[in-house]
Amino acid sequence: MQPSPDFELEYELAVIQKIFTLTNGQPYLVQLLGHTLVTCFNRVVFEQGAIRNKKITLQDLEMVINSSSFYRDGDAYFMGIWRQVGSSQPDHQSKVLLCLCDRPLSISEISDKTGLSVSSLQPILSALQKCGIITDTDGYYTYAVELMRGWLKRLYPQLLTSGHRESDW
Image (cartoon, rainbow, N blue to C red; front, side, top):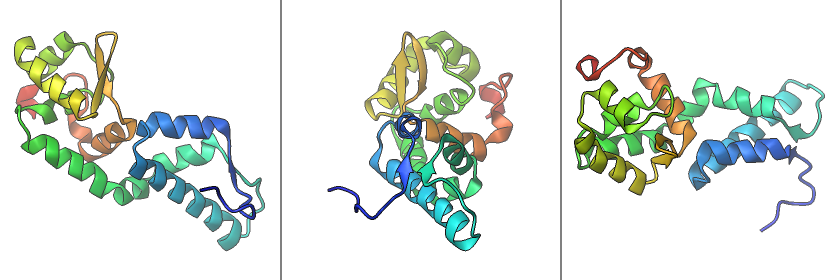
């Protein structure tokens, strides 16, 4: 299926690449970003009467992903993942996800931040990887879907300072 030839709106290549990085190709989030970008473009051009290039830019994408309305619209997806993690075995998956909101961490850094032993972290990290929530790159764990990190940072801003440990959660 191809877009209509009459649909003149284009995306910069960098925008397409960034969308894939932010979503890890997750279809719902790709569609949500596309829908939100087109809606914002239409609002500016047709409702506000602004004249602008018919190309979605990185600036447009940044505006969308930094807006609270985007995360509100995606809340069903993000909350579904969060609830699944909170009710799945092994326990403490949500603790691990919260501590990864600052930056990618090694297993020993995750252990230090959560107070969980390295041996108890192994099955937690494996479960989160198997579900496609986190990835391991050269021994550092991070989010597979970067937008999930953004959602959690908005939901739990008070917990996302480097000095917090398990007792703070």
